[in-house]
Amino acid sequence: MVNTYSEGTPFPGRIGRTMADSEDAYPVSPAPPAGTPNVLMVVFDDVGFGQFGCFGSDLATPNIDRVAAQGLRYRSFHTTAMCSPTRAAMLSGRNPHTAGIGGITELASGFP
Image (cartoon, rainbow, N blue to C red; front, side, top):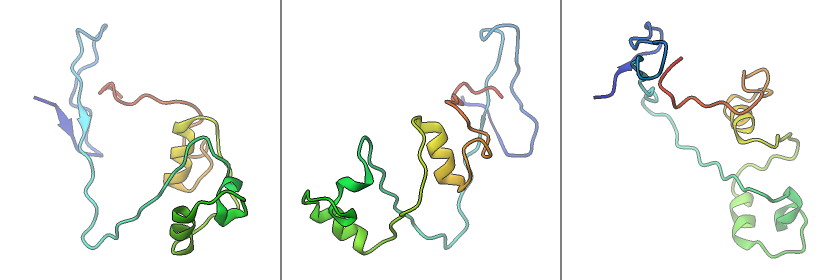
């Protein structure tokens, strides 16, 4: 059985001297409010923005161009070379250091 807890409540697990002496617990995932719209964000890896036709490339990218024509295109942005800070910036709209994720963070251990 997985031990869970809600945001704002004390950590119900136990942190011992070793992992074997400890008991993990995971926060319950929040549910979106009723009527929340669905948002699709497409993220490409190892490409530059200039490699798509919609940004001036000579390469044919008709499907990406069609999606870009019907959505929102960002023309002023900053990226980092690591996924966790980039993801924190995208999800919060803040600088990764301001969001508290200046480097790779592993949160899957079940301990605070």
